[in-house]
Length: 127
Image 1 (cartoon, rainbow, N blue to C red):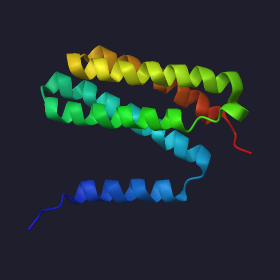
Image 2 (spheres, helix red, strand yellow):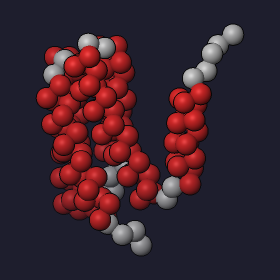
Image 3 (cartoon, helix red, strand yellow):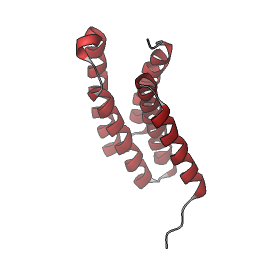
Image 4 (cartoon, rainbow, N blue to C red):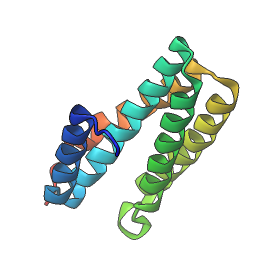
């Protein structure tokens, strides 16, 4: 018999609900928010010495960043999409390097970059 953590189950359900109700613009915002949260978690796990959770958070953050890159629309996004692709590529490589080196500053750097993208994304009003 498995024991479920009620708080974790609630969070999971809340996230699933937000995803199902989100439009494409909101989905990108949720992805950015999720990547930033996981990068901050990885950063905190290094400080606490929890390297297994750090690795999991880093892996999840990297997967989200890769997904964000895959969502880019170059036909409509033009130069902005190309710049975001370069940023996401850098972020992905930096996450891998920070994970391998237990480099909290690396995770913080990428979280800061994504914070900037997130802030800009929130200013966009979807049509």
